[in-house]
Length: 224
Image (tube, rainbow, N blue to C red; front, side):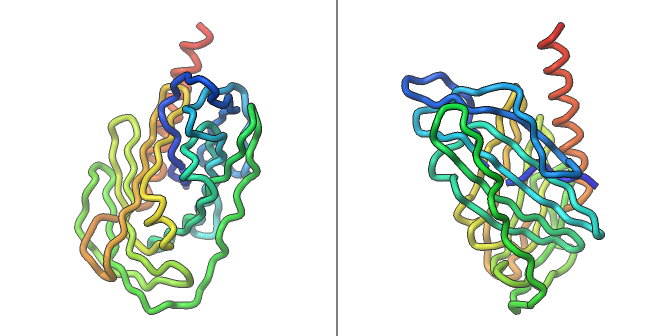
């Protein structure tokens, strides 16, 4: 099982700008430990800060971690949230700092809860499309009081997942991870309880593998 990349952050296209920060960058997808070794730097927009986007995915008793470090708009900083699909739980956070080459700490992720809040959401998933038809229902727990559609696009491949999420994901709305020539776009859309929409698991593996292949290709070209 791999975590979809990730977790969680709007990393905008990197454009040189006067007075912009230089930030350390790194990418770790589907790791067994929450570690990411920085080996390069990125120049940010003037309205961006250095960011650590961190996601933890749990399934069938196992855990994987996704970490991206780079640049992000200030308004996306200090966001945390949770998303649940049948047999899978994802928590994510975005932490920032505002000095050259600083490294934000890993955000404190939300704690899990097994206490039902009586909200029910329709669920579905698609590995090859940004849309899917509802195939079942899930009862939400804890602070996950919203029905959330989570979609992701990487290298032209789209996937979508529907389940329960925290209201903070509705505020986050979307983020774009852009590092070493590879862009991954994430979007969170919230609906009413039980509203038909789009919504998981093998797509996490598929998208992570595609992005890793592209990054490996980029690195090979870099050192040729």
